[in-house]
Image 1 (cartoon, rainbow, N blue to C red):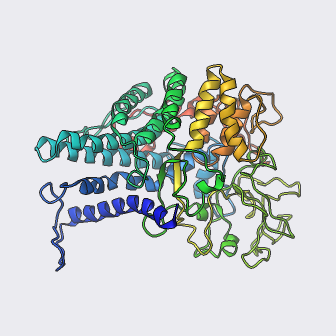
Image 2: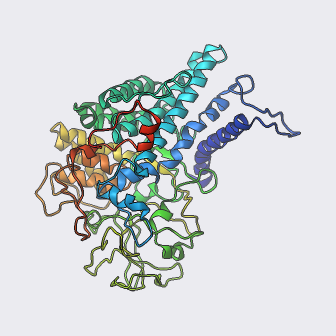
Image 3: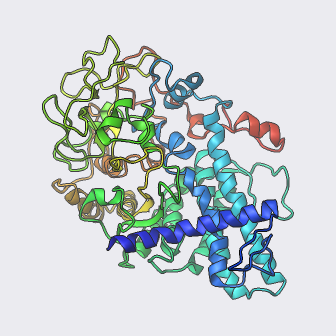
Length: 561
């Protein structure tokens, strides 16, 4: 696809958001503007807006602007840092924040921690915005200004958007209020049981998804179309056993087949085409967030994971923050021939090929070793910047904190870091729903139903792209316990981790496979005494933050907190 076509697809989302932001300012401040070339209004009302399909689409923009915080915000933190895929070590005074990041990784969080309140705010902000827009469309129909048939498509899309945020809520907190009425809703809605929330959510989506557009083009890029809705349902069915106690494997297959059999999506021949700076043409993206350093900012993974000295590797416009990294066991779960892993830099040469990780010695754009003048005196690598101490036998993370070495930890390199770019506002689109995940979900459902022979070819499609030989069995030792016993489906579980690394699936996978609370069998590769992951069953759900309980007396705290 030509560059201008890719940009056109991305702009279709960004302009929706920008238009809505402009309208929101007009409504909020009621200030008139002067322009001799066109007639402008000081407020948006049914009389001067909601007159055309273009204006309807623009009105949807607010529902999507909330997604801007998904890629590396609060959701990413609780879904990833709590797993064997990521940690945020405390390096001196950096990334301490009262110990919240260490507690998050060790499953020792408190209900006062901000990490427990941020995801709640993020999701209910999305729910409330969707409810407000649904109410506006329903009011237009009631007043006879818009035909019901015309409004249905937009209302259904907003229900799907709301469903996405409720999926996250039922997954993280389980027992939450059900809020659908914007105009006359309860100011302090009561907690509903997880099963009731799940049933409401699935029923709402099963009714709305068939009404969504099946177009896969610039008009639906970055929006919830029919296939994104089916993917959302597949995710809910996939975890139904966790959410309700009743598995729905057959429904997973049916939803996945809707996407597969459409023929509108396929695996990219190059895995990293999904993560390049200019990646909006990916054939795998079913639902993506089209980030841009100008039009839709906030994807700050580069700042979060890169070392201060990485600024000289990529000529970055701001210095990174030296935080997030992956764990040694997870990195080692990749075969060295796996194209997704990449190479580690050495003292004599930089990384030979790109991978999902930045490991080993790091080099400047001018071809010299990056020097860390603030390197810890006890770090055996000294001043040359070395992510993960690859090849010297030293643990990649010496401790979780409070005195983790500045250079410790293999960094997240899956998304391309643009030369001369701002690592705090990356332009890579984030594939929330990706076709490879569809194949893996269907494979798991088939495996669970005793149809492993049908699942293996699906997994092997993904392995072939990674340059790996095909599997003949899905059984194996799981990535977090390579010295442990062979587990039924263990290699399928591993492949899900390797393919979907840091795409916010891992916590759900660990829970669904029964590994989350299995006597803390996945443990940390660093060597602090007492750094053991808590495994109590109540930790399957996060607590409701203290501030939410204070604001709404009808909320009921989850058990164990």
